[in-house]
Image 1 (cartoon, rainbow over the protein chains, first blue to last red):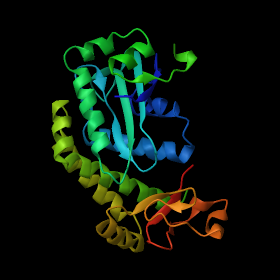
Image 2: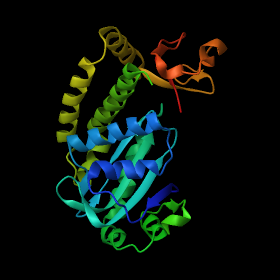
Image 3: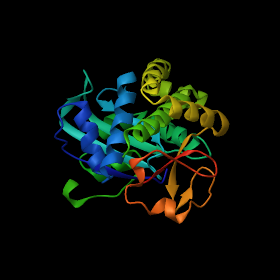
Image 4: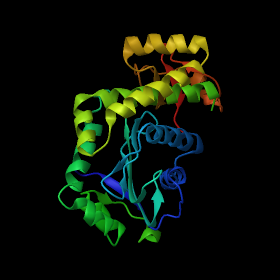
Length: 148
Length: 117
């Protein structure tokens, strides 16, 4: 799946809400868009926390506020309570709302499920760099030098 | 941004989340990941109903009509086009500096419109 992703290494957040905020900031959305996306992602987490596998959370939503796929991998060495179990890797993604329906969103979830099965989850938890984490999920990393 | 417009956008995003979670393919994939889409959908419906009641009656009624008719009631303006019906919006309509400071509808299809940041 040829999708680009950002990475945020050594996250400083101490709780899941600020972790979502810390990751959203990496996209440089304008304030209103960022706030509305934060609300949407928080709402989804409040309904049912998206902790998958041990130590990995996948906050996600589809929104009319984005015009393309927005994917970011976050990593915290100390772990972030989500809200109870601590997670060390966060894969946050927002997919656009298109007339063609939710097919692409479903394909991305399917892709992640496949990539994290059979050892992928363990590999990403022990990934040593943003580029390595992105390649485990078969995304291309649009890196920021300070994250290396 | 106008608070009511923010609520309409959030309502629309919530409706999308709920419809995704009951989509059988997405449901299956979320289950595979170990999530509980049925539980999430039920809770989101609850949240959606609460948010819906905080929106003014006039806008609620229009939202319901538009959702029933088009499937989407809120759309962004892209390149001066309503992205719901692709009609070019009048220039004067787009000229205001604070375009999202009031709830606007497309003069052609009637959908709620907002300008992307």
